[in-house]
Length: 393
Image 1: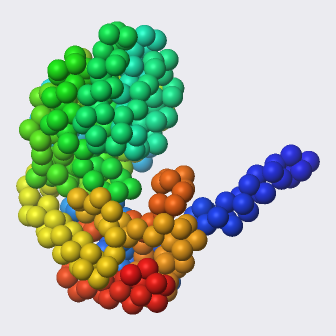
Image 2 (image 1 turned 90 degrees about the horizontal axis):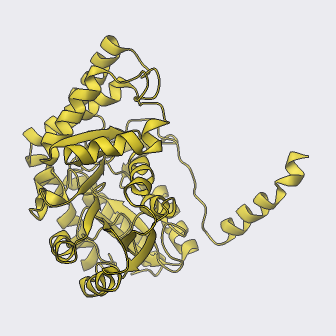
């Protein structure tokens, strides 16, 4: 009976597969690091968010192991009820110091920050002003709110100002929401200009810094990059990317943070992540603070890879960061390219609809501070060989 009732999902899946819009899940037999073993095959990893190569750092692992010995495995419950341990409070203080704000709080995931906080900060009679290419978690968070929303063209400050002018007298409160680094294209929001326009029109600002922490601002993120740490009202981020750990974070004024964790259902009604994760996250932030050369190496690797890709004829889109897409267009072609790369020992996945618009499929390459020059040269050699063979360059 169940199979009959859900057969339409099998049909939908097959339609997606025919369009090249499904994912092939591959199992790693090693930690996430620049060179991995995937399904028994050695490969150079260009598909991870592990920008600073901290996910397998022995000091981070040691902090997690020590926390298991001291605090056990599970958090015990939702943090709001019975699972808030000392190491979590230490992490929250470290977040605030790292982001140069009054307060900070960790969430179970980065997605849960946006999906939980955004619906609570505006109400009916208010409006979100959102970049058209914002992450899906922002879109979902806005949809859960009773406030209205207005979309401005991607990173277009003229259109943002026009939108702010239109809504200024129509709503009680305005919140401008933007990604810091846009995860599919690797371009950077002009946060200083966004903040200036928000100030001019009396709006608040909310930035998703998931791909900016550990990358921009000497590792501290986009608000530091543009010197607006004290101006942005909500700084959201994650531990699962450059930090190499797990979970999300929110930083801002103390009353902002307290309001967020007292109202966001994703924080209040989800079990806390294990205390070992909190200890690992804290240690990783300390390493980023103490070792700025990691960020320098990341950018050296990114610039070299991006320049060489362009020189051989690849379109890398709007990339300004260690996210360097190889634009393809057709989803099936992107799938074929990814498979050919994998056969040659390069693990980089295709990004297709609905993560990007149809006709804008690409391979999203993500550089790491842990990649050696010989890793990058090998990846470039394969990209040139396969790209020419598939008539993509």
